[in-house]
Image 1 (cartoon, rainbow over the protein chains, first blue to last red):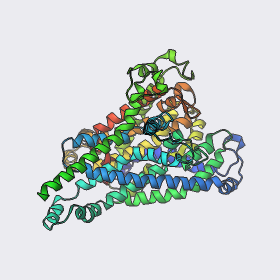
Image 2: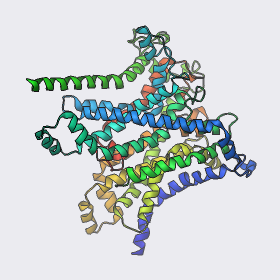
Image 3: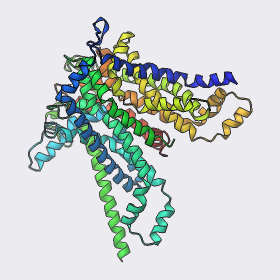
Image 4: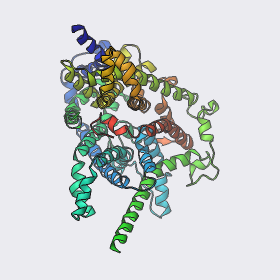
Length: 284
Length: 288
């Protein structure tokens, strides 16, 4: 009996070892580095909270937090709208529906780095978007210039990410029993009423699950912004993942300061992780 | 009469929706595909349809004599393509091995502390990997695996292992217990039941988890940036970024062709498992 119990643990031992050694210990190490003057070897010198003061006293810290929130919340909101629209559309019966469903998930299946390069080619001065504008007689736009950079990177994230919402909403729609609609029809409910009183309320759980997951991923999105704008111009698109990368690895950077930046923003992510674990996975 | 009118309205609305959807998704792909077929001379002012469509951009990626024109940082695309594939395959194999064992345990066994094990794995699964870029860079250098593909594989395992465990756990939990129960009654050990009975009938779940692991590794840019520096170790995303210098594209056709190439494997794989994507990602919380 006792041997059996030990054997049970053998199955999860590898996963626990992997997570502990290359996930939890490195995270703890980040915490330790954040109190040092230099990251490596003999240069390590404990300097208390100095790195934290430096970060908290820099204006840019507050800029990157607000950029991250603007980027994530607006991208998730738009992705949810498009995902819901397409799910309602492709839940109708018409020939070719299956092909369109498969077609719709292609942006989401494409690698984030490839999608970023797609839009570098599309946003360019001689890219397609400017070709269309000049064709209809409008001036070309600098999509990645200071004014438009944030909306432009949000658009890229939206274009790549909405199919996840579509897939979630579609399976939510398919789980609604058809009888509810039938009895509503007998009572003479209009299409709009059926949408508002039956469809949307039934999608509530799915909605929270996909929004929380997507918010988590969007707040951790490094690739899109790093490749499209590198956080610029004028830090307009500098988000937490990109800023930490430059703080740690650009020339003249400081790994301990980057580590304390990560520790300072950790609570934001922990709240979100808590919500994801409780509401998105709580029922499994 | 009003009935007919309403039906017609709906069809028009649906058609407009379909058209918008096709344009929204299709236009970016079309433009990049179009550029990838455009000759070098025409790339300076690309047309909506290439006048002389050519596959030269694709061939040039693998043509060593073009390397000089390409910043001379790497010979050709064969190296990065092989590196990305090898890393992704090894990451997939390891995370499937570790993930299957753990997922079966979480789905079927009962012991004290199991809920904490689940929470620990779920925590690692939902935690954004970018937090690991600093410590993994240091730790992997410390164990002398900096700038090696093995180091990159280790970094990828940090998030693909919890991911595949969680996907498989959801899948195993949704499977009927009867078959393995009878195997257990017949004297199979737990491990034999997993190996001989459960795994053979879990193909959709296994394929889904494997494809997720593969693409998570294939798509990675941040750990490749942080861990690799020698050109011979470059994976695809690093090699492709060399087509840009200081924010300027200087090889339009080749950039387009290389992104199309990098997109084909994950898209082909996801289309295979599209039915299982959503239930997999939500660990069974949303049924697909």
